[in-house]
Amino acid sequence: MRALLLSLVILMSLSTPAWSETMDNLVEKNDLFYNKFTEQHPFSGKVTGKSQGRVKDGRKEGLWEYYYDNGQLEHKGNYKDGKKEGLWECYKKNGQLYRTRTYKDGIEISCTGEGC
Image (cartoon, rainbow, N blue to C red; front, side):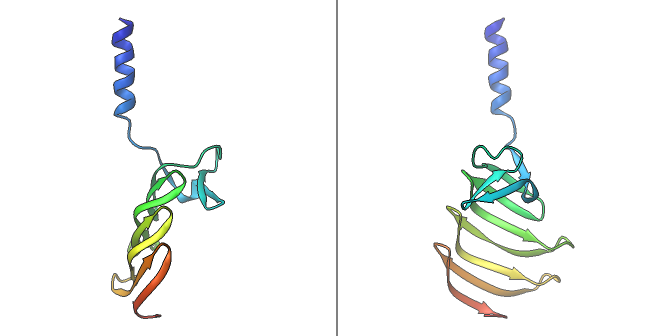
């Protein structure tokens, strides 16, 4: 009976969805994000809301999307180890693409469009 109960607990923990927070519930200290309610270990998990992406060991990682208050996409791009990497696209509130920027290791290396 104990083995069955232990197996069920392990199975349930493996199927639990990833931890998620909004940026409002995270704080940034020394270039790392922490859950503002615990602040003991760097946050890892999904970020939802007007800023959407993933944080791994306190650093933004992978695709991130940022939205205007009206729900329209504002800009999107990738992070690698907490730094902007590759192509970033910026949109107006009406959804029109108006600028692209390219980053390498967090440094902008090119810009095309309005405001460059």
